[in-house]
Length: 132
Image (cartoon, rainbow, N blue to C red; front, side, top):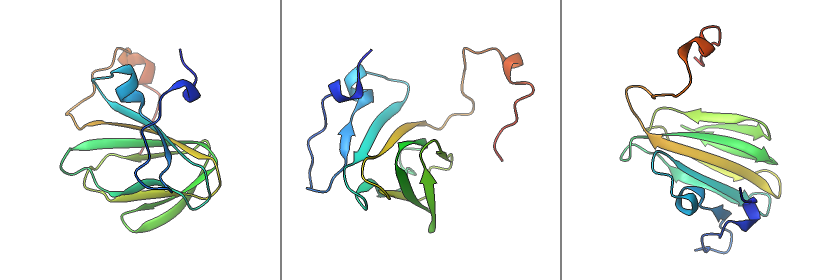
């Protein structure tokens, strides 16, 4: 166990870059990527404009503090803390900026696959609906 502030940061390239906690690199995960980004200031960038078409990654963004303004395929939406943005199509363009100082995102990504092999038993999910 480590506190987030014990994870060494990736050095900033630009003065307004978010704080970048490289969890995947630090812990050596090989099955998925995971990072945390914090924007110290409102309007600070969190996720640069990109898609994952080349890498074929799906991505999940969890806003854990503050509020982020996402633009997904040209549609802008404000996403408050406690909310999740799931992008399963790697070709979808996305970007995010902070609406509040200290806005923090947990980002999890992994290469698209025919099916995820879970250690959970299927019967746990028989009554749980999936997102449309």
